[in-house]
Length: 88
Image 1: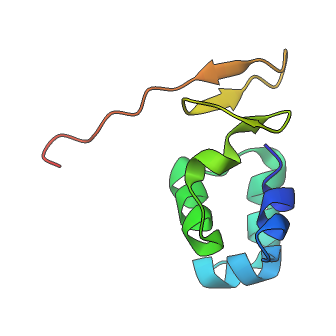
Image 2 (image 1 turned 90 degrees about the vertical axis):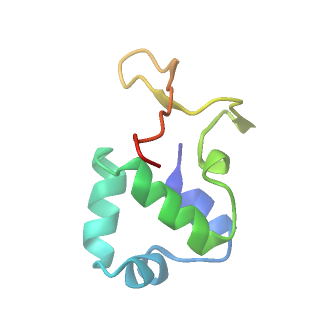
């Protein structure tokens, strides 16, 4: 997923999104570039951009039907199962 490209396609910049998240532009870029960005932060970015987090989960332009991450070694999607926390 190319978060920076998706952010720009929704009329935002990395700087503007970082400001709304309360972090620096360099911190957000670093998280995106090294793949350490959390799903919670992706959800926040999606809300800022006015779209669904699933729009960030795409391979070759096709949105996945289930949340997934891309294996950095083989490039294949690894589907994720999201469980609600107990008590929620």
